[in-house]
Image (cartoon, rainbow, N blue to C red):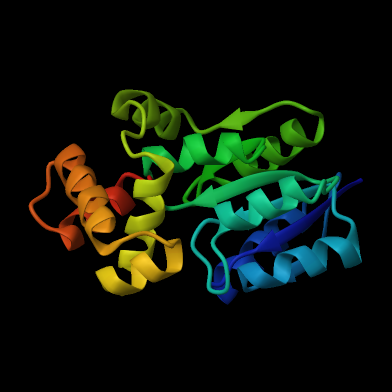
Amino acid sequence: MIRVLLADDEHLIRGAVAALLGLEPDLRVVAEVGRGDEVTGAVAAHDPDVAVLDIDMPGADGLSVAERLHAGGARCAVLILTSFGRPGYLRRAMAAGVRGFVAKDAPTEELAAAIRRVHAGGRYLDAELAASAMAAGDNPLTAREREILRLVAEGAETSRVAAVLHLSEGTVRNYLSTAMTKLGESNRLAAVRRARDMGWI
């Protein structure tokens, strides 16, 4: 029996997926959570074999949770469920040790097959998401540029970004200018949107 944890903030979807997976003879949903910051505790309490994480949740997004589980040496395999076909997500997920990446609108049979495959030590990648990631190429942003754009996305002004990262305001502006040029955008908010759309931040 493969023990599964489901993390999705949409209660109806989570319940429907849990019910459908429960019909599979070899799968058992042992825990359901609606927030990303509840996953680590639920993994510790229920010891699932596979954690199925929605990418967009309150508290912490699925990729951040996957990175924490990976860094903490969690035993469970992680499978990301997403309605976003953002190419950068796939690359970041692989770097976080994620074993599977499935579109949210995939049939339950496909999700069940993906759970079985990652539990067996394999990988499962949605073909369209993988193709999009390959076509988009590598993330052009440096780690520092991504860090600054994430802070801007949270509403931080240049002075605040400088204080948080222990940089001068001029240095922050230079990083922002470089990031905007790389992304082909004329202002910082457009750069943030572009980076988010690509899954690069």
